[in-house]
Image (cartoon, rainbow, N blue to C red; front, side):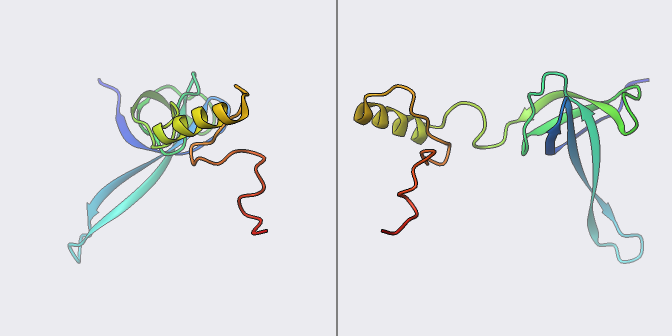
Length: 124
C-alpha cells in the first residue's frame, strides 16, 4: 500500500529537525453547497533542516517519530521568495558598498538594509 503524501506551506521552522506544514484543502458544504477551505497543520521531520518558512513542501506519512510527528519531508517543491541565494538588487548593493568602503566583509540583507546603519530612520 503506497504511503499518503500531502503538499503544503511551511509555517514554522523553529524546532530542531522539525517543521510545521499547513495543508489547505477545499470541501463543499453539505447543505449550502458553498466551497470552504479547510486548513490542517502537520509536524514533519526535516533531517537536513533545509525548509524555511514560506516554502512549499511535499510530506509523506511515516512511522511515529514522536508524540505529534508522523510525517517526513520528502522534497521542497518551491522556495519562498527572498530565501536562498542573494537577490540581484542585494548583490548590486553589496558590490557598491565594497567599492565605497574598501572592505570585503560588509553584509547587506535581502531588503537592501545594512545592519548597524542607524542613519536610515533617524530623520536628523
